Length: 595
Image 1 (cartoon, rainbow, N blue to C red):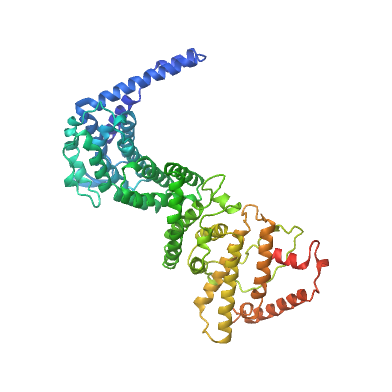
Image 2 (cartoon, rainbow, N blue to C red):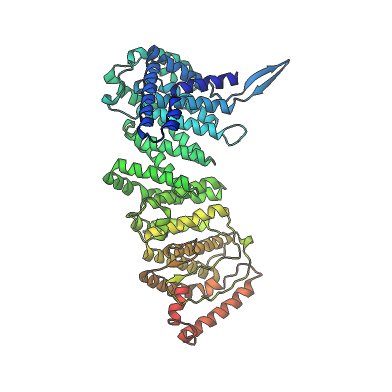
């Protein structure tokens, strides 16, 4: 039976994919006649269009409804019982047959662009395609097919585009008479009831189409009452799936919601569903897959052009800064509970909101340009207030808390000089520090978020944040060493995470290039970093911070290294180490630039 169904579906598709055999002959005989092929293509398109109109209007549209219903019946994922001899076996539906059925539906939608026809069968078609998508979005590859799910999503998007794309009555096809559509609604009523949507009352499906003037408003009410919930759930499930093909299809859904069908959504659904689609695109902006990130940028550019500059800026001012602070409060809790995938998605979403705040970019929504170029951000002042800084320090001190057991207890100081003060090289952490709550692949996203925030708030404000981190560490260590506060291991680990946060903030203001392992700094940035080094280095090598033991074993090593560090600093202060020890510049300049 499945082979027969495959043959029938292929035969149906061939009716809408007419190819004149004269085309190949003409191309072989007269390849120099460029206009011949164009004439043949126009004739074929005219024949296909005439045939499609005939199929669409046949039986008042019921023929198309019957064909679509046959395709939807092949999408059921439940296993069917097959009796072989005296035994009964269960057999899963054939994925190839399901893909062929979906391909046939795509052919129908592309070849028969009749708005009234597809609107009349939208409820049943949407329900069947949605149910097929949900049943194939399972994590077990044996129980689902990402190819079937992605193809179902594409057909679903195409269906909604054909049904809802054109709200202008003058642009609708008048060849399809709505009064003859009763058989269509009744023929698909049964399948719509079987595929019940969450939160939808399928018993209330309309059995009659209203007059032409009221039909559009009725359709708008039905769309707003039935579709936002399923679409929002669909975007949430796709985002947690590991398939990049499915995530690419999710961007098509976002394009549909944000741009193609935006006219149909009321104010509440436009806000909620629009934000869900926007955050889906923002999450994929910093994705490692280049195709996904570029596709997300394309959808966001279309959405920005659709809104206009004024509405876009108003949207930015109302949502970006509060949402970033909300995410900073949420992410540490997910990390401590071991929900790695949620942490990665929320960090990418945080990066997306920060990227969206940058202005005057040569390539809009480009992560690399935000990290490496000196661009201004609209949320720099908002993120540099005291409450926002405290939220950042709390969140990233937890995310960057190191795993103490993975640290090799070997404190060391590395001196490095450079003849070019504008060149900064970063010390490579060869000790292989691991982190307490997140894995290595997630820590890349954490560091990327810190650097983006550093670029957004600017060099001077970032320097103040870094200085406040070491001031907090100095105060806490002083209280511990004086005995005013009982030494808490958890607090010490978070202080270590705070120092790593400060390090990544420095990498952010230096516009660090990971590929070249270097950066070029402007004179103003060099002055800020030099002042920061003069303020921070004495705190780092002072008694409360440097002599704080990481364990009983390394206590003597830390104190011995601290004494050597103090002696070295004393020689610099007394000018025993002068500019003759370096090729260019004074010792203070070289010390500050290299620090």
